[in-house]
Image (cartoon, rainbow, N blue to C red; front, top):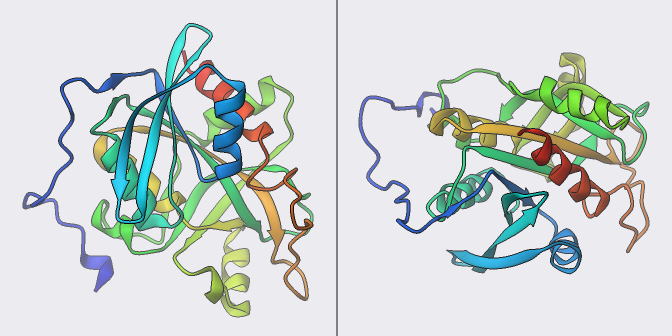
Length: 252
């Protein structure tokens, strides 16, 4: 069974191989959004320094100079296996132990406004990747949730803390499963958080995670809560990169 997949008694056949000349940086920021990637290239001091390859294409890795610090930045891929695989590949190219991840999430509580920042405190492991990096459990704790919340407080940014649900299949978020996760206290659902925390725990990295409250599942019918081409308050909201880089800056 998948929940018995964690093996810390034998070595992996394939392992990341850090490059001798990899970029030394203070932290790494990743986005899922091509809109945000474009915004960063147009508005920050950015240099393309490397790339990682997938069968789907080649993805640049950038260096951002910001307030005397150096941050890595790249666009990652949707879903736990691809997102974790990209992190493992990028770890060959950069030298840091701090990763800031932000993205959109479905909202499981109609009282949480569209576009509000949600900070996961723990994530339900409804995916397969994390079970290869950490022993089985229903939830995985997100240890740096309080630090992310403290940063939001310092900037007077409204946010809400709560459990998250990571799923591999957004087309199978059924009424019964939504009800179960809500009853557990989950306020959001997305596709990477629990696996990203598991790989970071395994590799000894610090993960800082926040989400944008997007579409609403806590309604009689699914509510996208935005119009086609509207980016404010969605996973493409460029303001959330500005938050992410200030969060990275605050860690030092």
